[in-house]
Structures are given as structure tokens and as C-alpha cells.
Amino acid sequence: MRVKKLLHTRMRVSDMDQTISFYRDVLGLQVVERKTSPRGSHLAFLSVPNSDELIELCSFPPSGPVKVQEDLVHLAFEVGNLEETIAALTAKGVTVTDGPTATSSGSRFIFIDAPDGYEVELIERPPGTAII
Picture 1 (cartoon, helix red, strand yellow):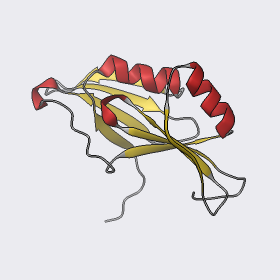
Picture 2: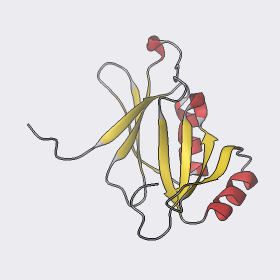
Picture 3: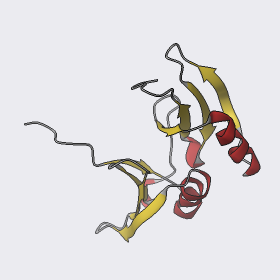
């Protein structure tokens, strides 16, 4: 068996509308589908520019509160200009929780918090850099 490609990553969330608002209004992701699963989970699929993979948000209140383990889960997105990104986040009332930090490859990154305690890393990479 060989995996062909990554299709989506699922994140369980407490408040679907609040989480969609964050990813849509702060980061510019697009909701491509919303539905309810056969077992009653509320699902939303988000697309990321220039990516085939989707982010699946899942709200299923009978599972209890969402508990995100520190340092276990975060999403990383590439941005074009870190200073412009920080200014846009600040204008929207979003706080940078860590950074900016420079790497040995010349990339720079910051972290912000998404709903439910998920971290989001925003990375500016120099041209031709494959990894931070």
C-alpha cells in the first residue's frame, strides 16, 4: 500500500461559526462545504490558497469540550510579507503570541492563537526555500 496524497486534516472545534469566522475573516480561507454527518457531527471544509488539501472542522458537542494539547497541534501557512501580515492582524485585533523569529534558512515566522487554543504559524520564506 502507498498513500497517494493528503486530502484533509480534521480539527474538532467548540464553536463552528466562531472558528469559521477566524479562518475566513482573519486568514482568508474559503468555506467550500458545510454539512452534517450521519452521526450528527457538524462539518465544514476550508480551502487554502495554492493547496489541494482541505482543513475539516468538526463540531460534535456530545464528545464534550475540546482539549487541545499544548505543543501538539498547529497549522502553518506561508505569507508573502511578515510585516504586512502583522499589520493586518493588528488591525483585526489579533495578537501575535510569539515572534517574529528568524531561522537559519532566512525564513521568519510568528504565531497567533485560533479558537479553542489551536496555534497558527505564519511563515515568510525567501524565494526558493522549501522548508522553514
